[in-house]
Length: 291
Image 1 (cartoon, rainbow, N blue to C red):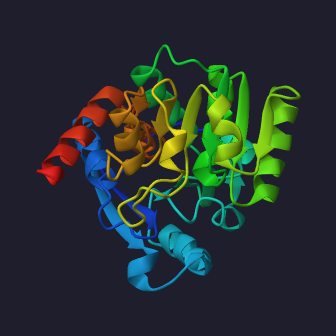
Image 2: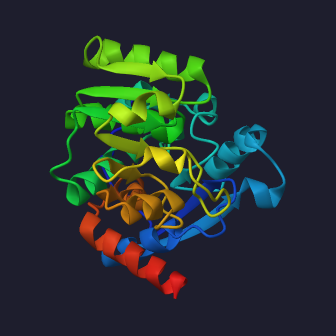
């Protein structure tokens, strides 16, 4: 079911949470809090870190119910909870249902409704960074929660053929089948390895956790990168991942993962977010942390 927003929360202070594993370094709370302040709202963000609590996704039923009881307006959802949270919700937006993943839960009128802003956030950043990108043949690494959302967004942007690469071939094939049903037969294929398809691609989208601060490294062999292969990242902490560094060193066009951090405040508050202002604030925080 869908739950369109018709009004902002009545209180000027809004209680929110970020739920995931290894999120102590996340800049999302500060970015969202500052954007809310520009609208005259006060946000309080609680980090709900599964790693710090020593629990896994099995704790989600209790977490969702507790947030509902304590009056949270909503939760941002990140790795590894984007798909595991779905059975705990009362309904999904059309986009979240199509993608099979949730990155935002809104509590309203006693219900917990799942949404997904990953695809729109990624597309916003990608179009601004690489407006002339050749979309004819694209490889997507990772078909989990973020990857599924970005696959939809990439096809909506006009990708001609999309290859899905995942260690779980059954998952990537299932996603390919559903995407072909929605966007046209033959536009999406599941591949068994990056080496099989990257040499013939015009672009590469990375949508796995590899490269995050807690999971450093490259998601594919460096020799597969080349100057005429554009690279788009979803990881944004750090902003300059090992993948982007390697691609830049070859002179390849790149798009960082900063757009992924711009998202759910409108769902939580009803206030229209200024995406450019949010990105600039996010980049300033990243720069300050790096310094």
